[in-house]
Amino acid sequence: MGIQITPSILNADFAALGAEVARIPSADWVHVDVMDNHFVPNLTFGPTMVEALARSTDLPLDAHLMIADPDRHAPTYAEAGCGSVTFHVEAAAAPVRLAREIRAAGARASMALRPATPVEPYEDLLPELDMLLLMTVEPGFGGQKFLDLVLPKIRRARALMEKHGVETWLQVDGGVSLETIERCAEAGADVFVAGSAVYSADDPDAMVEALRAAAEA
Ligand code: DX5
Ligand code: ZN
Image (tube, rainbow, N blue to C red; front, side):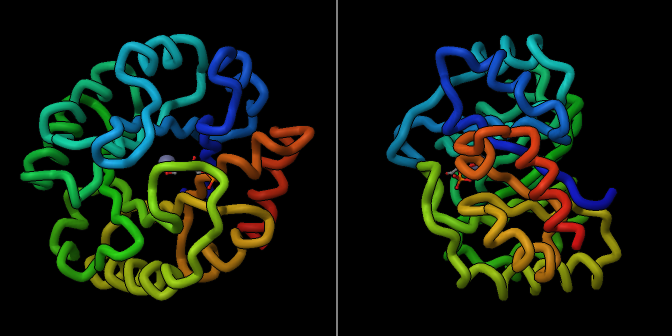
């Protein structure tokens, strides 16, 4: 599939999300951060908002669920029109069943790991996953500093994917910018979330292209 750039709208203008998404036509996906004030200490929006956003754009939505009890809620986001749905393994009771339910609901199934969660215990799940998200900050807020300590895990995850011969995409999220994206790509990531880097730029779409060029270099 190659390099993909998925801007996060977390730091965009929430009063004008449709217009904000229209500013990034070069994006491959739009990353929507769902937070519930339980799994993370921040609150954003739910399936009604996500469904409205899905109707407002031709770009596919990449939902990142930072919520408790994803077993109950994640399939709703597939039904709301998201092309990809990511749940956190730390919050999921039955990740295999949940990944299968997301796929059955018509979306790509993806699982996220917080910075301190090791990847090795989950290597046998890789064939069940269309994407693995490795958080490069503690989830909850945009604009945090990239954690270099996750880079070895990105390398190990890429090696496990090669060992298992899977097509699973490897996404990184948190502090990704022109300064850090090359390190992530070199370690083996191929899908890049960038929130503040894109929406604090004067020209967000030009930043999407600049990030893509840096990751491909
Ligand atoms: C953080 C969210 C990220 C966030 C990234 O918990 O999951 O998607 O929007 O923002 P930046 O790129 O500013 O770190
Ligand atoms: Zn995210």
